[in-house]
Length: 300
Image 1 (cartoon, one colour):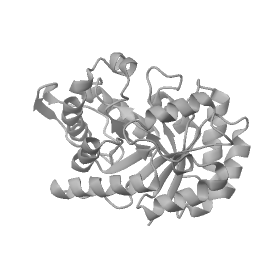
Image 2 (cartoon, helix red, strand yellow):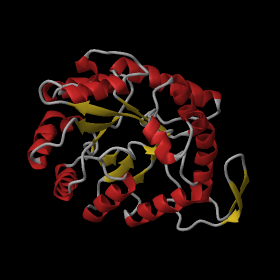
Image 3 (spheres, helix red, strand yellow):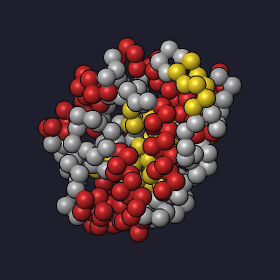
Image 4 (cartoon, helix red, strand yellow):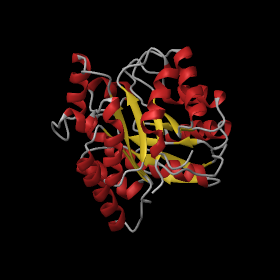
């Protein structure tokens, strides 16, 4: 199994010096990728903007969303936006999509009611694939209508391996039916294994296959005890799956190696490390993380 280790940008107000240090450090130290989460009502930068900035600074690391909300966006415009970024990044983009956070503010920002999100998503994602692969797209659906629409440019490889997030059983089954990979978040190794098996089962039932190396997880880690606001955020993120021991979800740096090994045993192999707070010095942070876990990565 090929193990790859990347980094997620912290949930904080965009800092150009910090982001520059992070992306250059990832490239220098041999990490696999940079990922940016999306929250319209949070302080973090928009993922496409942040990844475009990172693409201009780097030549090797891959660039992914963890994950980008699809309901509330027009598929033709998303297709052009991401294909343009992929071209400028010389084919390094890794799109990952989700329904959006279970949050009234997020749903208001995207203009989509919670009960509408799944149906919109299931119509929009296949349309993205068609826009990236086909010269013209004609489609008459419940939410989108196109008549011989041409969208250019195409991605560098005229398509992407599209990943999806999600934690509930219905989301995992949708991932098996529609996606090329699953990116979990805040999961224990046991939950990661169960989710992988459910995705694979749903894919098989749909006559598809998700490659065994296309299962990954955003892995938050901590330095010392959790601050109260982070503990509250963690509790909200665990709402679907229920409580779990802290070290099973958010290990400290000393326990990160053994935690990743257990996730590998569960069948996951792409990891996106996520410090709970921006470090004071990214060079030191990445050097210490490199020494702690990067030997687990099989491709550098």
